Image (tube, rainbow, N blue to C red):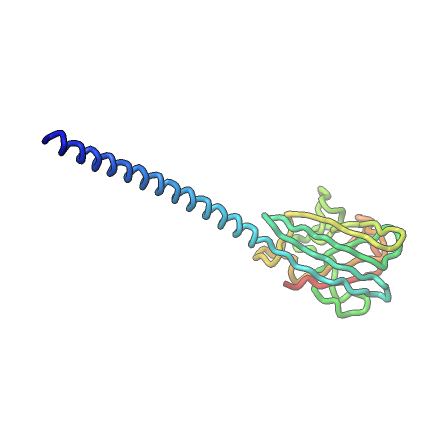
Length: 199
């Protein structure tokens, strides 16, 4: 009789421990799923934090220059990409100017180069200082087309740091070449295309 009672009791104990193991495995699997969901949410959050703004360049100073400019900020870096047409073949300067106002026919309503740290005009990265708007020169091909790619961690899109925030400024394309020496703007000539950077 004792053997008969012991047998069902063994089955009950075996089942209880088995269920406990299954529950433990189930809990561990749930934790893994939670971790996966958390990581995915963080990745989505990081992707969502990337900012992109796009603008059309408009011709100035009786030029035929057109184009598009985009700025993308991601992980503390801003990438500027510009695509231009209607240029004369050869080198031209491109800068960020201090005001997002392209209302004048000659583009001078944008003011001077954006220079929030009050440095001399120079080539980007010069040891003696340079404007935050001193992007530099680019080359148009024989058909007057050009592209510009520029990246820096010294700009931001609509942040609180006025020495980095490009919103409220303008992009100006010049007819001539920036000599990186002449003050205050590199003697780059007429302003032939403009776009205001407005968030």
